[in-house]
Image 1 (cartoon, one colour):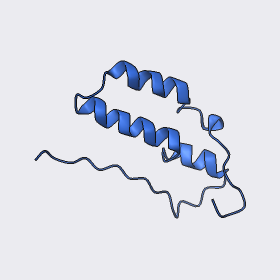
Image 2 (image 1 turned 45 degrees about the vertical axis):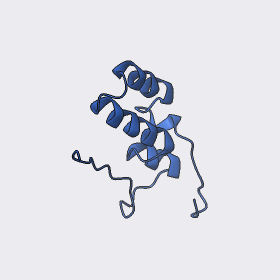
Image 3 (image 1 turned 180 degrees about the vertical axis):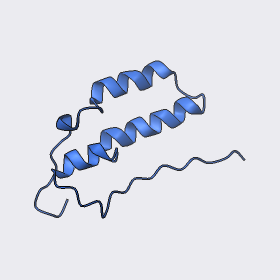
Image 4 (image 1 turned 180 degrees about the horizontal axis):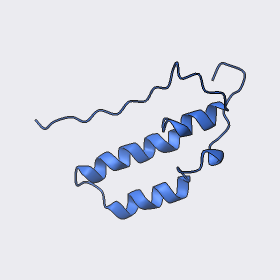
Length: 77
């Protein structure tokens, strides 16, 4: 059996003041970032071509926290 990879998906306790969506994007734990993380693992494992990963990064605008869904600002989402 091969070596498993680990990817953290949590941001609790960082105390930054921004929208939930922007924080999730900043810490790369929003839905789009998780998709790209999975695609990265597939590329690294030789199961997916790098072009598909590049397309996803461009489509989801991962370098732009303003592109993130603002999320729930009421404290429960």
